[in-house]
Image (tube, rainbow, N blue to C red; front, top):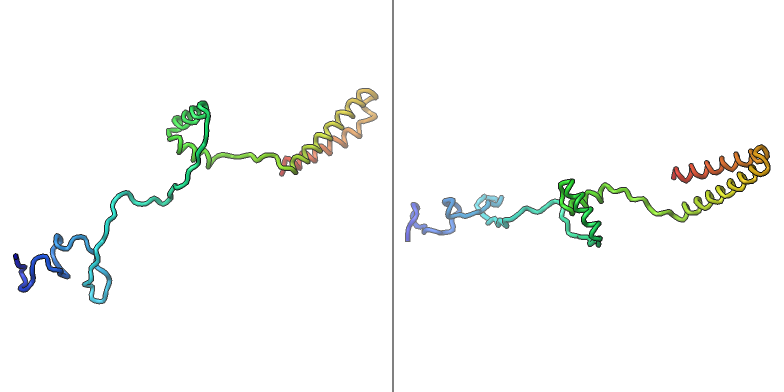
Length: 151
């Protein structure tokens, strides 16, 4: 066996010191005397991403829809997947009409019907006779419409 410069030690002995080749990748633990060593395990590979995409959604498309989406993605120089993600973040979805909105629209339709009847009567009997009624009804319609539009 080959001996080290120090008497009594053999090559490859577990030393608290040594050359960079004999120690391998080791890291010193912070202990009282600082002599304990611990091996570092390097997993290798790509580092973990901060945002991990682990769920998916399957979407059925017609061939025309697929061609349109792929064309728009190509124009934006994106993959279809990235285009979908960006489109989903920017999209404005208009909710369906709620039951309360349906009630307001029903009231507006009734008022519009009343206005049509008053208009027909004013053509028959003269505008001066139904002018005040028409103005009141138009004011009510405007009020309801503005409330509906403002919500």
